[in-house]
Length: 64
Image (cartoon, rainbow, N blue to C red; front, side, top):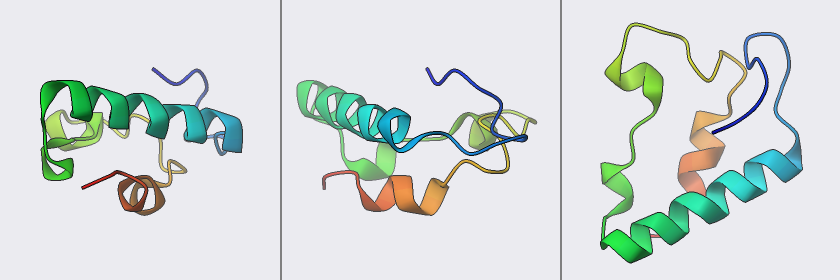
């Protein structure tokens, strides 16, 4: 979970670093490939996490 409105402002580097760390740990525990990680906006008709969410950068930081 990220606190903030990604449509209004960017998330902080600390928030993004923590998100990547958490998602990578969950992937490891559940033995999931990076390709299985989906953004909320990919599953529902929403801009959720916002238009300013750095999706490409986030995906690049996910471990294979």
